[in-house]
Image 1 (spheres, rainbow over the protein chains, first blue to last red):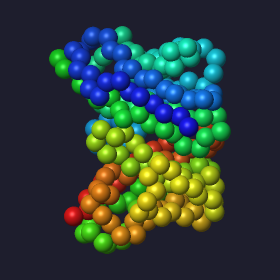
Image 2 (spheres, each protein chain N blue to C red):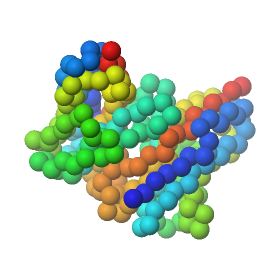
Image 3 (cartoon, rainbow over the protein chains, first blue to last red):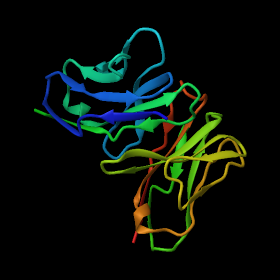
Image 4 (cartoon, rainbow over the protein chains, first blue to last red):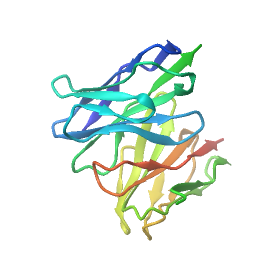
Length: 113
Length: 113
């Protein structure tokens, strides 16, 4: 089985500051990793995903994440956040034979002026 | 494409009542899933389907039934609603197992009194 731990439940940050949202996973098999974003009162949409190849993955809205197999991490970063980035962010994992995602508990990013 | 649609958007039930949450997708995806989202818990998988006529249980299946008679539709039935089922329910679909992006519906907010 696979599981995900998001290390911070809330991350407050000022506008234009950098941010890192942390995600660690555990699995005994190869996995694929995802970051989803949920804006207030909306469904989830994909930010980025790691399947294979380059460990640095770029996504939408200027976000990127780095897959680190030795540390079993997949942290999400953005060099300069905007007010509009305020949302809930979910890290998720699935095995290469799995059918549905295992989600972390989410990190609430609050960007203030 | 409408993507993944869910009805209703909001629902209030009394304890013991039954109802069906509807989910439909027009992307011809084989895989469909139901999640519930509770504060501080992330998204937890209720049931999923890997094709018409094939369903399986997820992490929290008790109190819910599903069926998949067509590729497009994946309804979730609450047999006898309980206050513990108060939650936001999301339906998702994806074309392939594992690597593929899951597309989420807008959610149904259910309150059980």
